[in-house]
Length: 496
Picture: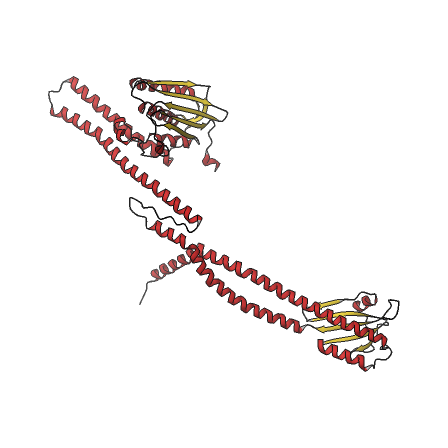
C-alpha cells in the first residue's frame, strides 16, 4: 500500500514524540535510577575485589617464594655452595623451586659474579644492577611487573652462625604470575556474566517496580482527564503515598473552587443581564410613553428625560465596573504613579460621600493621625477608598449606623482602615468576598445594587500597588477593612 511521504513524516514525528515523552517520564527515570543503584556499585565492588585478589595473590606468592629462598640461602652458606656449586641437594631444590613457580634463580657472590644461573645463561658473568647493589647494602626488594606478569625480588645471603651481618651473596629471583593473571581474567569473565544477568534482572524488575510506583500518579491523571462538564466532579483521594494524597486533595480543593467560581459566574451573568436589561426596559417604557402620548406637557418631557438620564447613568456605572476589572486583571494600563498627598485625597472622597451617608442616616467619621504622602496611582487608590466607604454605607444598619475612616502611616507603609457598624459578613464568606462575582447576601443584592465586582476591583488595585488588604467581621455587628500600601512604589516587573 502506498503511503504519501507527508504521512510518513507525521508517523515518525509522532513516534519520536512518544519516545521523548517516555524518556522524560518518572517511570523511565525511576528505572534508570534503579539500574544505576544496582549496577554501578556492583561494578565497582567487582573491580575492587578482582584488583585486591591480584594484589593479595602476588603478595602471598612473593612471601612464599621469599621464605623458600631464605631457607635455601642458609643452606648455601652451611654447605659451602659458594666454593662448590656441584651440590646436588641444593641444585635439586633450585630446580624444584623454579619448576613450581616457573621462575629463574641467580646466585651472585660478593664480587657481583653469578655463580649459579638456573637457566645456565649468565654463569660466571658479572651483574651490577641497582637492585643487586642495593641488596648488598642490606635493602631487599620485590618488584611486580603487571605488564609482563612476573615478580623480581632480591634475597641477601648471610652466615646464620656468624655474629656479623656481613652479606656474602645475593639471590636474584624472578617467577611468573601468569597463573594469577589467568585466574584474575577468569574472575572477570565470570563477573561480566553475572553482571549481564544482573543487568537483565534489574531492567525487568526496575520496569515492573517503576510501573507499580507510578501507578497511583496514572490513576490521578486518568481521574483528571475524566473530569469534564460545567459541574466538575471531585476524585477519590489516592492515599497510596503522602504525595498522591496531597495532589488529589489539592485537586479536589481546586475543583471545589472552580465549581464555586462557575456557579458565581453563572449567577453573575444572570444578575448583570438583569441589571443591564432593567435600565433599557425602563428607558424603552419612558420613550414609548413620550411617543404614544402626543399631548405630553413640557414638564412631563423633562421628568421623562430625567428618568432616562438616570437609567443611562446606572447602565454606564455597571459597564464601567466591568471594564475596570478587566483592565486591572489583564494589566492593560500601566500605573500612573505620582507623589500624592493621601490626606487631601481621602478628605475629598469623604466629603463627596458625606451626602450619601447622610441620606442613609449613617454617620461618616474621618480621622487622620499624621500627614501621609505616597507614590500611588491616584485614580486607582481613589477607587479603593470609594468602594470601601460606599460598601460601609450601603451595608450598614437602617438607623443610627456609622462608618469610621482612619489614615495612618509608618516609615514604609500607609494604612487605611474603614470600619462600620453594619450587617457584617458571615465567617464562611470571609475567604470569598474578594472573588469576582461573589455576593454575600444574594437575596438582597438587587435591592442594595451593584454587580458584586467592587471588592474584586479593590483588591486588584491594591495588588497592583504591591499592597495587601485584610478584613475582620462579626455578623450583625459590623466589619473592618485594613489596607496596607507601600509609601514608595516599586515596579516588580522591572525588578524581576
